[in-house]
Length: 402
Image (cartoon, rainbow, N blue to C red):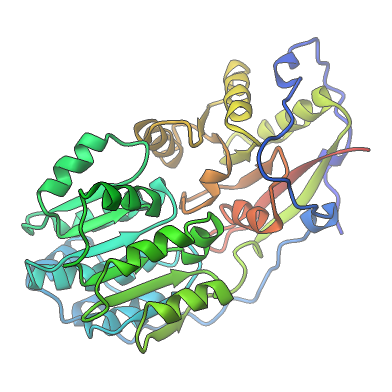
């Protein structure tokens, strides 16, 4: 077990400047699970470099529509990632597929290429893709759009926080591709603006997270609307627990299962706790972390929307390049904040747990749990935003001394 300087009390004078961080509200909502603070302390696991994966196929080998092949070549795709190499051939054959993989493995293209190939070959075909969050749904659409230009296909993005009028307009065009979150898709089904009786392909991305977020009933209601005959289904999940397996068993037929998960996403994250004795001490230690390296890219989690608003405002007043994301912001606001974070226009993002679910941002060095998570599962998903692409990440969880 290791220690770091953030265990030490700060000698920085306060002079009242951190008053804005005080008087925090008690949390509301579901009661938190008790998590032993020792579980927040863990050294990063350094593994020997695995043998480099040698793909069986190149992207040029895949038998796809010539227009799609041209777009793939224009994107500069040559050697597929392991999950792309193993799933795309089964998808092109029309098989149901289970993909077990961490975020950041290239799974979007693993299902996008066979789905879009089918849509291009069959102009009347329709596909629906479900994702747990607005951000992931939008991210999937952006990836698909790079392959869809000049294809003659239409799409609709159905997510909360975005104008309903735009979604209704896009649905009136009878889109070939619908991408969205379960809640908003269910809304459109109930109002009759979306019918799924003629859809033949369905993708559920991050199934485990959608179940964790309570979407099980919405997911079942949506899947029941898609005729089982001639339906091709894709299920992607980082974990296959009994809940996930039951859903897959019920809504798939003879699926092929591909696993490229190499370990826990948190293994490359150096984890420790930061003890504080009072609110001023807490924010002083937060500032110590934030100013330790100007090149750090930091994701900070706090309890409620109001807490996130206050913390972000205070950090900006203190001169930090920060922004925020939570469920109370419009989709446009959330997208702008994330784009700025991805492009390094800001280096600090303050968020509620919505940011832990489905957001893939390269280069996050630190995850700071300014408030403890609801559960240990949420903790793992939070800190999994750091430590990507073989780089060591850092996670600090603030714990009040008692």
